[in-house]
Image (cartoon, rainbow, N blue to C red; front, side):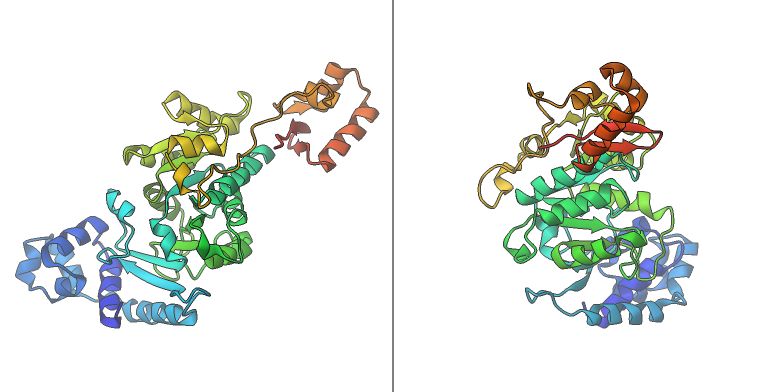
Length: 386
């Protein structure tokens, strides 16, 4: 995109009181942002309110600073190892603008992208959920995402703490770092800040990995801080980019249910992983299932429901995420007594007859082996294993 064209797009985005809907009306009538700002007052008056026309006549005070910052950001990292541009700004009128986003009610005027742009045209599944998942929820997110990515499916999420972060990590693990361009699977992180910032800061290293092996995407101009309204807003992009949305674990008030609702409104599939009836973090998934979301237990379920099995580069089904333990005759007696719901040590002692010292030592051993997770409130939970 040439400097003057980029300047015009940024001016349109930054103009106060001119929202995306008004901007699209202007673009549909006049053809380009340059034409919008060259239009006569009479032409603008026929399309927008007087207040909006007055705002369009004035340049935003920070326009030139934002233009310089954007050009510097683009130039700072010119190419990927593949030779493709590392950073790009896509406008609503670009041929490379993702077609799936055009189906959203309010597609962004601009998208700032860093990484593998071809992932925008790859088959994708959103994997979302709680920012404070259980240990099992975190593992499920990672395992499902890894299996989907290994099958050639791009995993889309929001770079938040918890399920989002685990999903990105799993998807990157499913896509070989040495030759990521040889298979479509990887991950897209849709963020709620400018791409010159990382939020949360704990995900700095993860964001760096995504920029190299996947794709970072934002509709927000450089310098935009992590404002609360930005995160629900970015969820529509997560939903629109994906053929379906998988909710791994969510409370009833979880923001991931917003993504699920937006996906349903777009006619996309909604899928959910069930959990314990006693866990608050499973209530959102159970509510979705009651409303018609597909109950899934493995990554293969996701591939079959979304008809994505052909996405696998090898032409075979993806490796499954955990299908849960099948009780074996020689199963550990504490694991058998524990089941899959959170349980206290006192309850386990009552179920098994083991004394506190013996039981505590055995629980610690199981925890070190990764078979049991210690939860807040002095509770323990069995971890599903492959």
